Image (cartoon, rainbow, N blue to C red):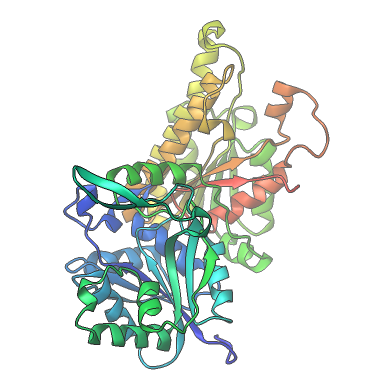
Length: 468
């Protein structure tokens, strides 16, 4: 329910463009990055933000049905309408403003192709709209900006503005509905408006309602706009390296998501896996644990994995969640590693997740279930003495993102947990005793793992960090 003391807050996702500059014949917002379309990444943030009441999507002409299918498939609860955009950004924005009706509200206009928008920015925009009627998101310019002018043999520098006062505009751009609508009404009545260099909504307000102050909320370098081909690769890498977190749940949500469900844990005899087993059982799940030491199930043995899952399904009639915490850590230089070490590391750390994924997908399709894998912070960059471990963990991250993409249409979610250094038996064997308070507890990682399993996330690397 919206409190009577505040205005409705509407996130308007402007997805009306076509990706000509990235070499596409379809809208760039439908391009997939890190397991999801750019539009889905953006809608994930707005639909999941607690301070946003409603989301409206303006989609490129001819692609409304595709956007509506994405909304349906992801179960977005706040996306009320998907409307067709116009031939220009101005026309698309005006269509959105007209669609919002006459009731006053706060409007956050956001480019769909800025999928790395942080919830923090949205929260600060919402707070700023309590004091201002127009809000811009911007960041300082790290580059020197020059003003060019035509010269006899090409452009020359005419001026170099003071960089300390320059900002690079981002979105969302946020307004009281009556203010941005009034600015556009004046703009559309001005015959010179189509030829003006103004391209964004704050520029319209600045020109046609100059007495309305526009407050600046600090943006983020990550809040980039996917415009050119190189942006696709940068955004994909930023998603891979981003510190994602799972929404923390309460006791009621744990009980609702686990009671009567079936959870299979590979590597569940000790460490993180054992804590997941205990936690899920405590909330009423039917939990089945498999490991080499517990019941002779080796994840690198595809027949053993298939048999374990088949037995669970025969007993319970369903499999909702599959978790793989099995892993081995061998340190040392690659040239000095024995063949057994190489085969075991690759077999357990990478072939194991592949085997589990292939064997479990048919069961997870029935329940629209969730596969959860594990990586390590070393996946971001290979280091000496960790070549096998780091490379297999990087492979698991790519496997997660690829499977999330492959299985999205079947409603199966795939995520990867990336815990900071954790006090597990595997780590104790590798590093010995370490100072108390410098390691995560397996129980903390297990609780975050359950949060991820019960979330709508897919294709994400979810970090678990030690509170300091």
